[in-house]
Length: 418
Ligand SMILES: Cc1cc2nc3c(=O)[nH]c(=O)nc-3n(C[C@H](O)[C@H](O)[C@H](O)COP(=O)(O)OP(=O)(O)OC[C@H]3O[C@@H](n4cnc5c(N)ncnc54)[C@H](O)[C@@H]3O)c2cc1C
Picture (cartoon, rainbow, N blue to C red):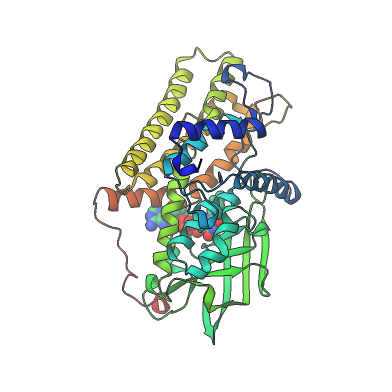
């Protein structure tokens, strides 16, 4: 029977049988108890480069196994290796997979498959789509997103990396920073300034860059949470053929907005609308140290639980809009804020419960481990656009409040003092 002819329930049964043969079921939550299993609650991997490569490779191996059944790209067209099914089938797969122990999917894989692949689908030429999409979705080739620079993060449109035309090639010079997964990437999707003499949003062009090209140097950056998952990327006369320009010259801002839309919705639904395991872990911690009957502790835990329930309802609202054929508005930004604020509150409750144990590695299970969450949570708040920027978007585009003063809006980029 073709996949398209399957009802949702038949598809669910097929997925379940497939997973049954290849993965182990997770234990029921009531079997999770204090002191058992790993106590990691990190936000970022605290791992050496070799360990991180192993994590990435394990995730890729799982994606490639999924690709043998088309389960890596359920809603994508068959020509790109997908099953061409409606999005709801994809959700059914994810619901089923979440019941099994499967490798963690490193953010470099999400960037490749959930951010850059749909951007190339939306803006790429037929040649670019045919060359790259299937290998991206199957993670045979990995990509990174080269947006931020030392002088432009929130003000992305102010970016300074230059691309100058030389015949049928472009010559790139400048520096990118915070590039997640660049050390594992075969290709990068990069925004460059191609015309400095027009206002900033109009002089940007997007390109697809072979990361092994001469003139591209990747240097990992060590984070306060331990690992080094993102990088500085230097471009010294790196060359890109014009056929790897993504969309028109000067259309880079439009392309960038497409990707940011995907990034916000990916970052907003991280927990899939469920109360995350870290919250139940904090409840377990409160019981273990005998503080679960303290009114102040109970109130903080209840506040955290309620926060994630509301987050779940926001996600349901987005899904309902999508099902009704409507385009979600600022819900992606609202969801990202829910995640950011939730992670901060988790830090506060862990600090309230653990006090000095948070900073002293005594070897006790489930105590010092929380320091990795505390050091990693601020990074989540910044990645994909800071919380302040999400609030600006909600205020201006959602609530229609007056915009921020933008003094450089109509000024050529080259004339803006910096
Ligand atoms: C974990 C992680 C992964 C990342 N991965 C990537 C990646 O793969 N590729 C990539 O290109 N980038 C990546 N980034 C970079 C990220 O997009 C930027 O850090 C982010 O956009 C903020 O830019 P900035 O660090 O330059 O801070 P700035 O823009 O300098 O902001 C500094 C502070 O000022 C505030 N601020 C700035 N402008 C305003 C405003 N208009 N209104 C109110 N407050 C404002 C900000 O909220 C922030 O608190 C990553 C970052 C992190 C933390």
